Amino acid sequence: MEFMATDNELRLLVLETSGRVGYVALASGAELGEVRRMDESRRHARDLAPAVAELCAARAWKPRELNGVIVSLGPGSYTGLRVGIISAKALAYATGCAVLGIETFAAIARQTPVEAERVEVLADAQQKKVYVQRWRHDGMEWRAESAMAIQPIVDWLANLEPGTWVSGPGVRLCETSIPTANPVVPQMQREPLPESLLRIGLERWRRGERDDPLKIEPLYLRPSNAEENWDRLGLDRGARKQGDKENAL
Image (cartoon, rainbow, N blue to C red; front, side, top):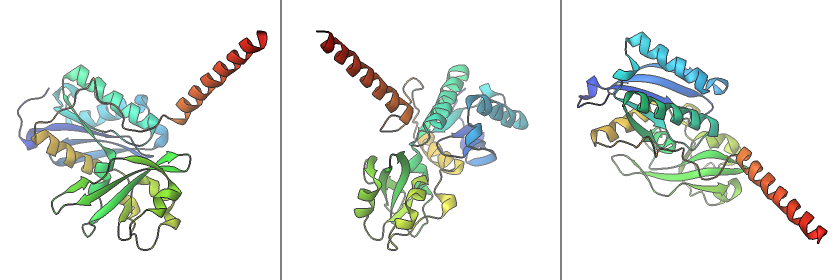
């Protein structure tokens, strides 16, 4: 349950399930404890819940003693995001703990090398497109300089300003085509890490911010391929029925 705790007293759960590799971790305030790594084949709800239970048991924490859960919002894996966010909601409902949703690109931008002033963060939007958002360091922290958008990779490359760093899991789609004038963030820093989510989550906590478990949703700008195929199938069926009606007249 939530209470007025100091940073060191806070018991927090961190869920990062947006990427190919997922992470589950516990933290005492700003101190990140054991991190459980979950690969793409084991980010299902049936695997995440036992991982949380095992981590809590190792610290002798009961789930109802958690003050909050910090969860990544995406963009990223549709399945992974839904599993992480639904798990965070379920925990909030069951224990009354707070929920703090963190935009995945904000965490990735935080991992940009200190010498960078601007970075564009990419994720795979499928169909040769990328999610992209530009960030700028204002001397104190990284701030979004543009809204997240979906662009064809060729268009994004054509408009990339020299000197801007590039990061995010979407880099793998076009790394060999990125101009030499644009430094690329090292591979291990392109994926959202639990420590970055924790830092941003703690900053929000200190400002008194909390998210409504009823309203928190994955952050992506387009439906999944399965949803698009289902919609397309529905349209095709509708067109066939309409054609059958016209032929019968």
